[in-house]
Structures are given as C-alpha cells and as structure tokens.
Length: 209
Image (tube, rainbow, N blue to C red; front, top):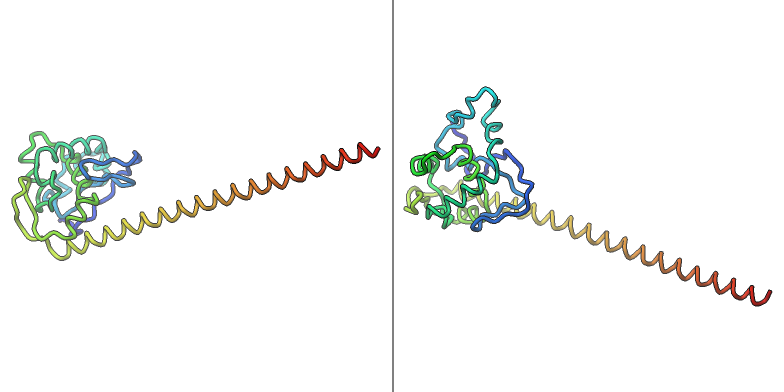
C-alpha cells in the first residue's frame, strides 16, 4: 500500500558535502531521499533490494544509494527529458515511465535522484503554483490537487523558517565573537596603559633615588 504523503521525501541519507547545484536543483544541507510518494507507482516492497536478506526495511535499502550516483543520474534525466530539464510537476507514476524509457535503470538510484529533484526549492516552487502534471516528454496530464499544492507551500515555509533560524544563530554567534574581540582589545589596552604607568613610576623613583 502506498503512502498518501503528497510531496515530502522520506529521509534516508544525510549529505555532508558542500552545497551542490544541479541545473537549479539545490542540494544544500539537504538529504538524499526516496522521492515524493506522489510520483511513485512502485510499491516499496517490490524493490529487489528490499527482498534481500541483508535489508531490514525499504528505508535501510535506500541508504545504499550513493548521493553522487543519484546526482549523476539526475543530470542525465535533466539532459534527456523536458519534464526534468524544465522542472515541471511530474506525473504520478513517473518512475514506471523512467523504467520503461531508461534501460538498466537502478531503482534505488532512481528513487534517490527523484528525491533530490522533488525536494529541490525549484520543484517545490513549481508545485506550489502548479495546475497540471507532466510526463517525461513534457506532455500535460492529470491535474495537481489542492492538497499537493498546499503541502508544497508548507514544505517551503518550513525550509525558509529553518534557513532564517540558521542565519539568526550565525548572526548572534558573529556578534558574540565581535563582542569578545572588543572586550579582549579593551583589556589589552588597559594592561598596556597600566604597564606604561608602572614604567613611568619606576623611572621617576630611579631619578629621585
């Protein structure tokens, strides 16, 4: 049974690499994830990796997909298909279309690539205002539901809030660092003046002696 979670990707592997931009698909402090359930038409249990005795769950299986391979595949999809290149809202079941059109496509890498794509700011902005979905060739199909548009809006708001909070913490840390430097400079100057006075007194007593 497929989840009704409309857009939000399921986190499976944190990307520790610096911000990477792939044709406006931003991966900055992001995650490599299986794609939004809305565009999948393959039950997770159907994955051959999920049936492996070394995999405890579909989520554990997805962790094996390297982020670099997923990004490479995404570049290929953006070059090959207008729907990815133009960041159009993807048709539900786009994974089935990909498996039919791309020979030898690895499912877990495909899902990770879709997760990066559907989790990007550009895609979420497109979904927020979208009215229809598109197949790989950019042909319009089914309508985008209000639920999916609203979910995209909420994800964007959460992401912007998180970014704003991060910048606020950075500003406060920077201000604290500058204040510490100012206090250190004041202490250093006060010590210098004290040493000068001591030297002046020592010189005066030496002359009087």
